Image 1 (cartoon, helix red, strand yellow):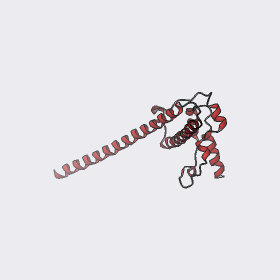
Image 2 (cartoon, helix red, strand yellow):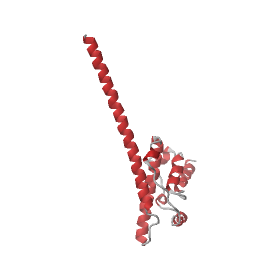
Image 3 (cartoon, rainbow, N blue to C red):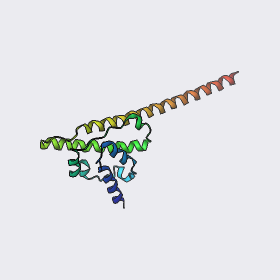
Image 4 (cartoon, rainbow, N blue to C red):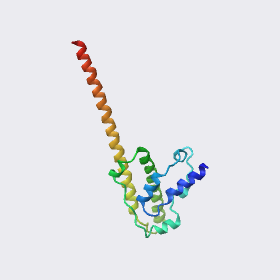
Length: 160
């Protein structure tokens, strides 16, 4: 049963038929099991790093979507960003594998701009997570400062 759900979620990720943006958006909504994400039981077939032949041929005529913007990603939860990161990471690895295979065979790589779009989307995720981290750190620092001021005020009132 878990193999079936893992296979279904892997198939969902492999369906990049319309565009990178649409496929990533659909896949980020999928619920991926924790077993699929854990490194101990990571049994990803090598086919994850290659596009299927029929999809590869469709890529020659398809338009590729756009990358994710920081504005769009700010609305996502941490879990959604994590799932999206995993999908983009796998897409990047697949693209690198395909580019290398195309270079070895002397063929042109279809739509090389996909790599840049994935890289830009991953950078946007890092930007959003950095913003959230800085905001959280500033909230913690402000809270500590307020606590220190409260303690100082209590000490001043006790000494009077």
